[in-house]
Length: 369
Image (cartoon, rainbow, N blue to C red; front, side, top):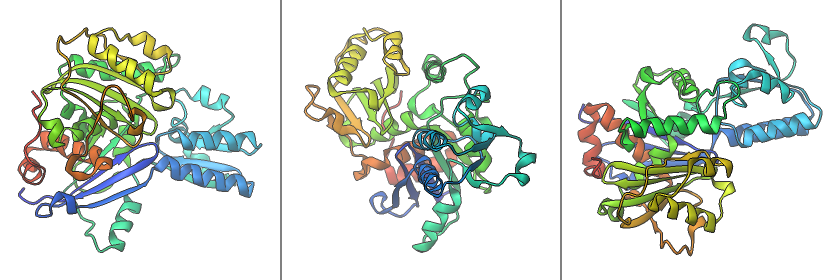
């Protein structure tokens, strides 16, 4: 395929970052949108229901939590009922007994007709909203492939921390030798444990192939397209997202270290200490977990200092003035779209028929091993 049109959407906690890739259009001129994330939109709907003093019925599929979750908790605290289908309820916890303990009534899909409440549909992938926005500006709505990134904790068994469960998945990918561009799947290949990715696949009804990827690796992979980062052999790369921060130690394409944390739990000094420990090999998985993070790989020191610290993400200002002298990566002149560039690189690796067109516009990929 010589001229594929691709829709790439990086779904975060604060924003969903959207890119329309079209061969023949300079990537700097590509259609781009930075819009409120689905969970932010849910939170706004819930707050409106609280003001209107009405009960809620949550339907749809499992999606990202955060702001939507907090708004639901506040709605319950005001004394209003919240009912949810099983799939929607798993947004709050994979263990439905814990969801019920929050005060949410879990209902079967067959019982919805008799429920009097304001309905909110849960989904991470708002295809109709995106295409409506494109249509308003005369942008064609047909695509040869769709690529979506979401942050997936996975379906943790009862009694298992979702933070630990997620990090075990990341660690397993590194242990099997995965490169950054290999943290994604075509719709039919998604592992059963990755319930948020599977939910995205369920909500895509188009004919074009769907590729899904984890947000952290996607953002860092996209940051490698920055010329300064591309030219470095040994890199510490950090994506400071609105809700999560992930850091990779990269030797060419080989992942030599990794930790992940909640951005809200980090200060500049704390993040600097974790970066120090990542590079010298003293970082400890249990220490990061006990600090409310997800975890860290204990792989020891790689034996070399990084050439630079590349930083991306909407909260990259956390490292302003850092003694690490961070380099703010701006791939193709658009930092907020880094995850979309990572999605395109991942898609090119998974569907080779798109590779030539993507590399013609983005240039050759950074060395990935």
